[in-house]
Length: 196
Image 1 (cartoon, rainbow, N blue to C red):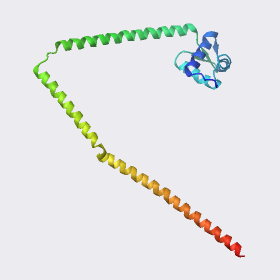
Image 2 (image 1 turned 30 degrees about the horizontal axis):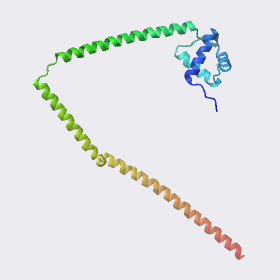
Image 3 (image 1 turned 60 degrees about the horizontal axis):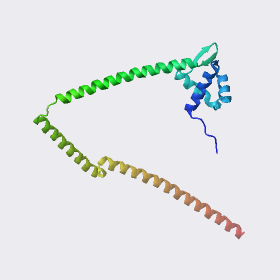
Image 4 (image 1 turned 30 degrees about the vertical axis):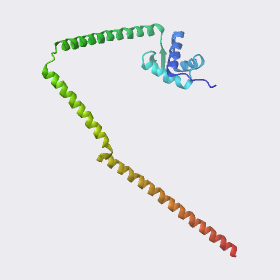
């Protein structure tokens, strides 16, 4: 049974774990070496995974001189998670308040609506028109094959197929005639040799 490779999420988690366990900063070469040896991450993918962690703000990067240094401490990760949780909770509260306000407005409007004779007749008229519309659409679907645009598209497709078939059969005819010509020449040359 072959080994199953790690998913991208598992590789990201293992690389982040490498930083949190060591609580140090590294250069790219050190990360590649430790990631391959300790966390069993494929060497070629470490750089891309590290870049995705940097892009997401999980791992920090700073250029000092000509070298790039990478680090991620558990306390920073915890703080960023707590901050994300707090912002999401605020968003949730805001959305729940908006939902409640809209629901209250809907309830208020429905309670104020009076069913008048005009409204019921208009609703009945709308229902009839919608039914008629669906009937027309179903009839239109029956005649879809006769639609001029579809017929024209089919004719173009037929023409293209016909041209392709002619091109291939023409090529085949040339091939056969050349083969026949070569064969007759060989036979003629063979009979010529026999006569000598």
